[in-house]
Amino acid sequence: MADDKPETLPLDVPVDDDQPRRLEPDLPPEIASPLAPFAGASPPAPAWFNEILGIEPERSFVPVLGAQIELLTWGERGKPGLIFVHGNSAHADWWSFIAPYFAQTHRVAALSISGMGASDWREHYSFEIFATEIHEAGRAAGLFDGGARPVYIGHSFGGGQVFYSAARHPERMSACILVDTGFGGPPTREQMEQMEREAIARGEAPGRWRGPPQRTGPHRVYPTFEQALTRFRFMPPQVPGNLYVADFIARRSLKPAPLPDGSGQGWTWKFDPSLWSKLERSGMAPPDTRTDVPMVHIYGERSAIIRRHAEAGRDPNEVLAGVPSIVIPDSEHHIMVDQPLALVAALRSVLTVWGR
Image 1: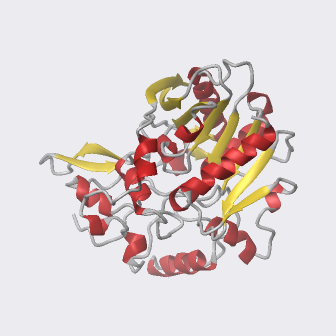
Image 2: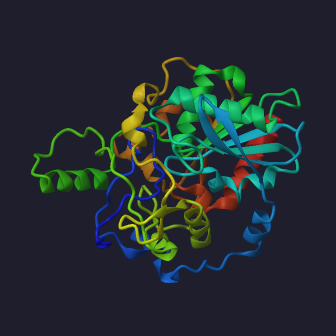
């Protein structure tokens, strides 16, 4: 199997155009293959990172609508509840170096929504299904044991799920925090140029943007774990702010799989490559109904998701009109990768102001 062509990898992107997609092969190596220089070894990490990972979660599965949903929990039952929701093609461990910072004061949970992480894949997906998974995971984690409703926290596509729950099921939460959540919108100039090149390469005339092509084929299976790690990258494309974080996430994005030729075991990505073709899209646009749920939006100063709106001449936060926002300096879309401790500080500040 040739490995010189771009492969769709675990990606995390905005609500309307966050489908995994092929990338141009001429991306700089620090973006296209940020972990390649380490040849399978882990990049050096600071003491705080290793220490926080030492606060390991309890791992379990929760049955929801016929699927087993991966659940990670920290802290004591009875304390105020927090539940973290990851982005597209990601998994619960994207929060494993963030969530433990709240375990002394809260009962904390993170889940992998169906089709991602170690959770089961479904024949079809919807925002309502994801909302049910988040709620049932919170109940199983004991987030309601103290008598108060939990705070929802979601990144990117996960922020879209949190917003959906706030609008359709406000009784399930006391407040919510969106982390770099874009609510769709037009692609960036670079993305548009790329899609035009792809259309020409397919013999098609460039036309109105209808979103990136859906993927339905299976993942590539790599013969070694080290080779699979070299194929990990982020969407929107960016240089990871901290390679040790990218490495931690990448290692937990892979699972063993038989090699296509039957010669042994290889490695492939955990997320369902057909999720977007199975997803009911009616919940993707923010609901017309507004919500009284307290809400804050935290986003990266250099986020491509936010920049996309600005390039279209729109207020980057127009969907969340009236919602307070916090900008994290020196960060792109993946704030927990670029500025994890700044994200922890911002979350702590919001929770303190809310008294939660």
